[in-house]
Image (cartoon, rainbow, N blue to C red; front, top):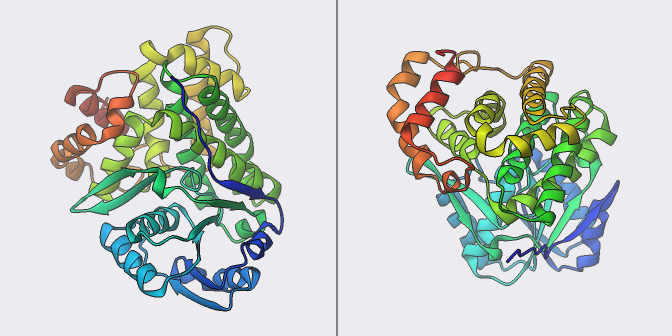
Length: 358
C-alpha cells in the first residue's frame, strides 16, 4: 500500500512569519543559532507572546546531548509554541527537543533559507559517539511550516549552493527507487526540477529564486518521507562524521559517482529527472549522461569542489579512514533504500572515484 500524510499547515510568501500571531501563544520558545538573535527578535515580535525565551546551544552538527538539554528546557519552561528558526541543524534539534520532552505544544518550523526537507518530515539526524544517527517518528513532525523569502535575504551564495545540492541529492534518491508511487514521483520530480532551475539565481541573490528553492525543499521532503534515501545520503553522513564535510558539499562530490553506481537499476528514472530538469535525453543512456554532465557543470558554476582533495581533504587521511567510512556507510539505514545492494566493494569504489584515484 502507498501511504501519504502531510500533517503540517504550510504558510508561504512574503511576510508569512506574521502568521505566528494566529497561534495566540502566551509562552514562546525560539530555538535558533546564537548568531541569528536579530531574526529571533522579529519572530518574538511577530508571535506577540506575553513571555518569550530562547534556546541557542546548537552546533552546526546538532548532538543528542543538545537535544536532551533542549528537551529539559521545554519541560521546565512549558511553552505553548516552539518556533525553530534556522537551518536544518536547528530544525532537527528542535524537532527532537519537542519529541523528547513529551510536553504538548505547537512546533513551528521557520527555515532561514531552506530546511533541506527537515521542515516537513519526521526525520531527524543527531550526532553522537562519532557518527550521525537517523531518528524517524511522526512525533518529530512540525505542526506549522512557514516559508518566508524575507528570512533568506542574508543567506550567502555558498550556503545556497550547498543546501541546493543537498536538496538535489535527496530528490534524486527519493525518485530513484522503482517502488514508490505517483505521489512520491510527483513531489520528487517537481522538487528536483524546481531546485535545478532556481539554484543558480538563488546563489546570485535573487529572492524570487530563493523562495522557489524553499518550496522545492518542502516538495523534496514530502517525497523523502515516503521512501527514504540511499547510498548518497549514507556516504554524506559518513564523510560528515569522519571529516566534518557538510552534506551539501559531500553531495556535490558524490552524485556523479552515485549515478554510475546505480545506473543499471535506476537509469530509466534518472533519465526522467534529466528531462524534467530540461537537460533532455530521449534515450535512457543519453538522459543519464546529460544528468551526470549537468550535475558536474552546475557544481563548477556554483564553485563547489569536485573531489575530496579539492575540498581540502588530506588523501592519506582518506585512505587511512576508508575502513571507518565504509563501516559507517554500511551501518547507515539509508543504505537499505538504495536501488542497488550496497557492499564494502561498492563503497570503496566510490571512495576511489571521489578522490580522483580512478
